Length: 213
Image (tube, rainbow, N blue to C red):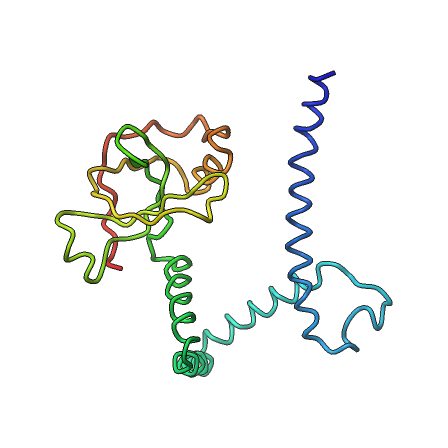
């Protein structure tokens, strides 16, 4: 009986959690439909709400924004908008910080979160998985003697929380593991190991040079 119960749980738990996450995402994005006039909402001409339309509307808005910003006039409008937000007290500090982070994370040429590492944490003799985010910059770099890199050490099972630390390159091991595999390994608390065809760890190696933050 216990064996069958566990087997059933292993089948239903991933499915239920997946559906719950999808429902949360769809429900949240459907709030975008509130921006539309009442006459354009499906409730007025179909008599019912169609789930998922908010997702399509959001994707359309993001796509059209990208297309508009790709031409000369759109780029000038974006610069004008950035200038306005940067002049508003309080808003400018929040907006500029978030923009710098998003530009770094989503830039195709950036190195942030492109490489999984093995680092000693929280002390000598213990190891965990971390992600390369860049190199120390500003006045911090002046006080660090040697070759240091910036590293994000996520917590488990929630990798959105973690620690930002700066470590010597020689104290890091570069993993032959994709970022997706590393995240699965962290979220599962080590129970979902990377694919067996992943090459074994190399010795302590020097990750490629990252541009100054």
